Length: 255
Image (cartoon, rainbow, N blue to C red; front, top):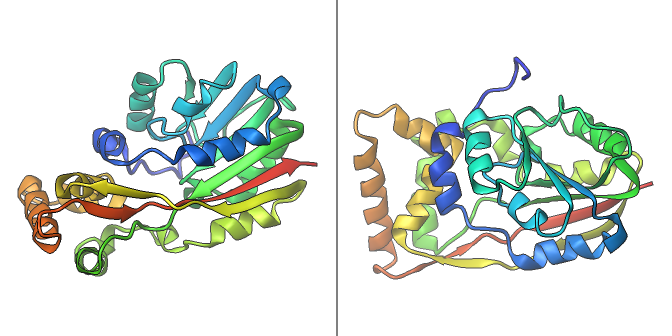
């Protein structure tokens, strides 16, 4: 494990798994369309979290290697997706045989990584013609009233706990397009609206690195989250919240 790695999500692994929605099925259908059936032996998912991508991959590949540096998240990943082979290490320091992988995925995690080193690894691990699929989404959006509540927290109580890398919403796509020895095949976006109860939307923010870090510094974090939930409920008229989790996907081929 790199001495520079700082775990951020392990203490919120339960909330991460429970409250973060899965990716839309269409995203994985697009990825799979670029991977021929005869080349579905091994897939690697980098920054695998609790297995939101690995859970899909195990249904289509003979072997799935899920790479997750946070020990708490890796433990939850092993519990949620026992079919995957979990490696508790960073994507930068992971070891894998040259030309041994058919697909590398990175979902909502590239902003935490040294993209240059990770793309060099992916280029080495992938067979010629192998696929690199990177996908992410900006901060979720809801109604103007609810978004105003979140914006106030982001600019106020959560700000000291928010890593600067999270503010770079578009640079991950630019990095994929610049990756050496890869040809971009597809750059697309998906519409994905998830209706959530105020309690569920509160749970999403509990799963963030900065929201959970702020709450852990409080004497009574439960009271803080209940108060935030009540504000969401009041702003929504106690109705379901239409939350926009629309992701973007860039698919590239090793050349």
